[in-house]
Image (cartoon, rainbow, N blue to C red):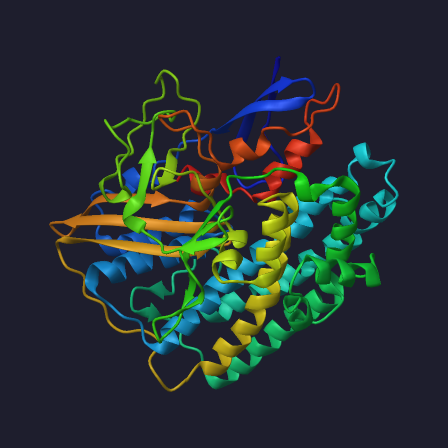
Length: 485
């Protein structure tokens, strides 16, 4: 048995280390360390409730809108505020723009460049991986970077700026969209659609989203294994058996994404249980945080976030991370695009997860399915805007009370819980997607989702930065700065 410390990782957002116990060429156990402490939950104490909308977007530079939306929903819950339809559509457009930009960034800039590494020089596809995905100079990397830049210009019109957009409010969006702007926004969405259809998929979004199961997916791949970057990825999956690499806990949490004016959700919420192939209703009251292995004060028992405590104890014995261990009903869960697609009944994702579980392959595939599904939704939301009607309603917040804001960031379930006393924030707790996925062990010693996924990963002789470990970590698309908010 030997120990290997891997990190800090490149091509992830924030700082991360992973400590591995290696036995006979495989990972026997892992401990995941979020190495920073930032203290946003403490900063917010004593502030006026509305000030949260200024602070929380600055938790992260790539998923700031997600934090804004969760905070706005918590404030809306506190004040009993309902958005008008235009506000709902505009907020969804702002959030979806950021989420899809993150999916594009993950695939082209964070994940696929790993296959251009020299360790794969003997593979028949390596030269093509270099041509497409070599960092800084890969043809598709450059194309995706340009497409991302043009895509994010939507947020100049929708929200005034990005990151740290300030137009999202409990009562809607303060940036109304007129008829001419709607036409220009539709044009930009369709330009992004064109990039996805020509470069990523080499087919229409609708055709790809209609693939009903693994058989249909692999038949589509076999038609031309190198046409489009996703089919190239599928070729790599077959060669490296990525469908079996990095299996997670088998339980997948979605809070539901893109609330609609009729009270529904474009992507459903719930807990998908892979072993039973069953969607259980979400019970947000069953969420707890355990700080047993975090450098944070530990309560006598795990606490619901509404009653949570975040107080640093950097010399705490037995701790190895700044991340608490969130649990749902005491269980370890995984969250992300894979959870959203499972909860919303997407047939292809449900089939591949039934066959392989949550793995490197299925996590990446779920993001591609989400791109194909959400872009047409955005076109519909733009068409549904009524420029002469209200986008935001005035908001008045009570001096006493509490609120909960549940949303879906690109990386999964994001929750904000706040308590207000005397017109000031008395407590503010955030559980981010990577808090779930990169959680440490709990008081019972049960590893978090990534810690479980790393167990069994192969480590080659002499590897100090095991490539299989890199693939597994990046398949979750970690955002460590949100984790250590």
